[in-house]
Amino acid sequence: QVQLIESGGGLVQAGGSLRLSCAASGHGFSSYALGWFRQAPGKEREFVARISWSGGNTYYADSVKGRFTISRDNAKNTVYLQMNSLKPEDTAVYYCVADRNNYNSNWESPFVYDSWGQGTQVTVSP
Image (cartoon, rainbow, N blue to C red; front, side, top):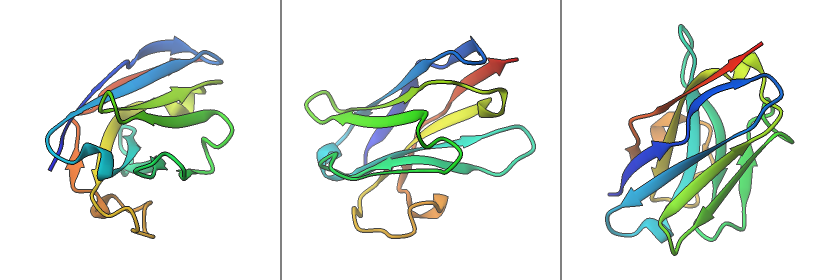
């Protein structure tokens, strides 16, 4: 199992950009599928993006498609989430996640992920 630590959250105006990073430690990072979820106050945890172990396959929630980009650097044990054209509705705590099964088809469910980071706050002001 890997341990995950997010960074890069903060306060930004609508239309701005942020890049989240997630550093991993532990065995087998490069073999895990990785992703991001978010949770806004009073709402359920929501899938944002996922990337396969090789980086060759990426998946996005419709709400962020075209604005967010997930990527990974296996040499640095790090996954990134580049967020552009941010909207107030993107305000949430963002969580980095890892799934040891690259072939899970139900990737939008939080229950398929084995490891979670502690979260980083992203706040987008109008």
